Image 1 (cartoon, rainbow, N blue to C red):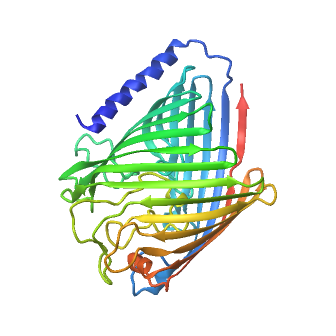
Image 2 (cartoon, rainbow, N blue to C red):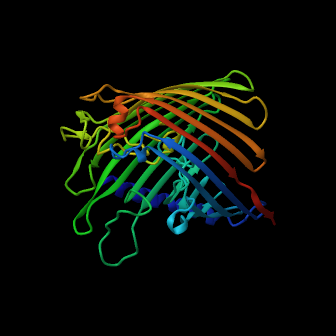
Image 3 (cartoon, rainbow, N blue to C red):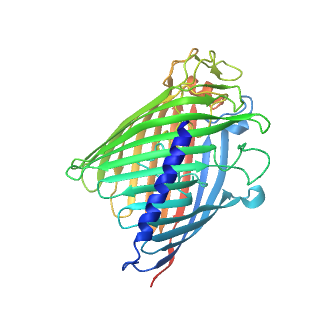
Length: 445
């Protein structure tokens, strides 16, 4: 029996447990009914130059200016054993044709009992650990959601979640189950996540296993290619020091171009470490290192597509459904925007920085990042560039925050060839964002 079938049956079995436990508790307890209405209005203006894939001869593509925005309205309800949330969202670029995109970002309901068992079904965010593998990617205006069934158990020490998803373009009776170009990149997904929090030590440990099915081919001839991810995350906070580490493996198969005959064995991995220290109430510092494996025998010709010279396996680690903007450079050159062609030489990043909070509501973050490929390239060296990131934020009101950021990267010939851009290695990006998120209404009875 395949992995996804085992996880599906396992999740359905767990789904019955919280329902039975909830049904046996006839009393509703003393918790009142609560209804809330929340809103969010977020606008961000950006200007950037260079670093993105484009036509080498077209210099107009090296600079861009735009304003993007997001508006949300959420309704939430909760009582002793039942809760639900519905969030409507509109996001887009100012002046875009069609006025942007409107969708339902969240629509879930949850049942739970007093023993820690719960079941949540519907459209929801999946945010786990440091968001490297599963996160809401909230920097992006569209953010990230999943249509899933999630069941689990939680108490002060142990948390266990089982998640299952199955996506389809429409409820068609005829036409098979082919799925592409939907709201998600995957056909099916099964995940098991476990977290243990030591009560006597400030130490938390998480383990995760994912089985992800990606559709390849066309509606007339297709199959589902499966890949697995497994690994763990550890966070230890002794006093003012905070230490984090993560390690993940990817196995199974990956597709080069979504064609039915282009899948290759996948053997990839990543590791990360981070240390932070709180010097006083105003100043803290941090440093870390990320390593994401890349494809071997990687060629970077002066002209034409970038990619592999040998096609025996895929070794590039993919960030799955994580909050990529948070980890791999604020300019989003890697794991958000693709290289000019297929495959990836991976990424290694060393960084250090400091956060200064001179007074309440205001913070400044300055950091340095060294970026390089993890695989050896045939024509150029590994170094991609050196990046400096500056960010600051100020809380104007209780529900309003203004943020400002600027990033400068001194790119190399490697960066220019991989991104197929003519920017003379000077990569710039600046942004200004206003985020207003008030609670409009709240009542209990």
